[in-house]
Image 1 (cartoon, rainbow, N blue to C red):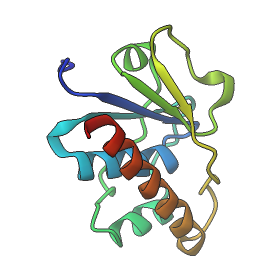
Image 2: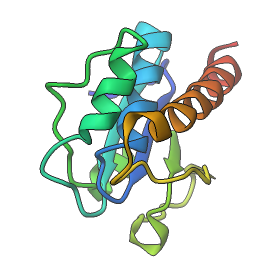
Image 3: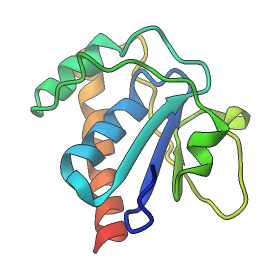
Length: 135
């Protein structure tokens, strides 16, 4: 159930195996119980990208048990802020929601060395978002 006192954020990318998983994990890790966090993909992969799991483990965040999820209209409706990362027209748009589009490189098919700068940029943006949402 959505808590009306907490901002709710949904991160969306195509496969829900990289960028949106990292963003959701950072927001949950940094925001704790101050925010509700969801992530999903318009065409979810079978597993989270192993290079993403490794890069996040370096930050002390374990994604090894995460599973990509299918984007639903309900997830969008339950969220105050929807942050898209390359899902284009596949992301449903609902009136009254705040949408942000984060242009970030896709970590798919890249090694951990290429994922680290993407991870670090996502962490920076999530920290800024958290400050904005919770003061």
